[in-house]
Image (cartoon, rainbow, N blue to C red; front, side, top):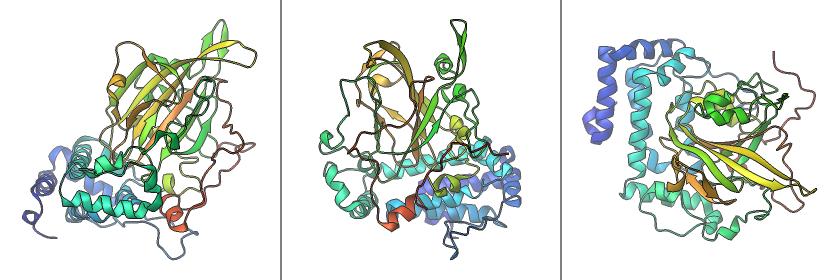
Length: 418
């Protein structure tokens, strides 16, 4: 490994810091890192990957110098990263925590958490840099996106992050369905919709795998969580509501918009949490359907924001209804902030909102929106003839982002995992 002095000063300072933490066992840094390495789990065999091309990094037997080298390569190689390759380092790093309790503690507590925060800040500074490196990466992504760039403003962009949250050239390329019908819910962003969970509780099992979602914690303790879990109302028990996940792919549009019209009655744009620490990050990418059957419980501890919408709609019998919809914006690995437009940053009173109105954006990294609905309000995904349900893809993009064809299994009749 090169001497730390050979690296740019921000990276050198970062590497020197974790080196010092290891030598002095700062707040147990060495103890936890060594325990993490001692308990690293070998990459499981994958029958769909006979040639061993799965994105993997074998942390078994590695030491602090290997960790420093890994961070150095991650930092210095970012200007040669294509869209599909951008997840590789994240996935390689995640093998530290794969089914590894010690690894989970290491990256989510104390100096290990601070280490991931510092590195995320380093990456953010890189992607906000106006130098040649950012322009090289922009050019690389533009070439990879090809004709899909025709939907977006042509630039120029001063930094890679400005490119990443690029605006649509013409908003009409993302028309808002039924703008005057408040009963119609629209997708908040370009996303893969893959999880519909009925009968939410504060901790809700999801079929196929035993999965939980702490709704109260997801909404940072907001009293509005009670709208989405079982409650007593008028002498009757109202069951829990519905959750839908909307995962953003790294090479798509990264602004998110209001799924319903009405008013935002509460929002919080910066709920502090962890930066890394998925027990099974490869499963999020490599299940047949991205995120299908994944353990969403952990997302209530990541950095995130949330908004609670109150909307009114008229049903076909001309009866008026009021209901609440929550949108949780989760910044996953390598995202240090969840950015909202000014009017939605912790407002002190309700803010009017139109369907499809711009709410905020995610800068570079992994991200998703989770939509929460009250009981009985969102029974299923429903599409009209002629609406988009997906796209035909080149195999290399599918392999890079989805790993397998994304066929969702039917949940009817499937028992809970035991």
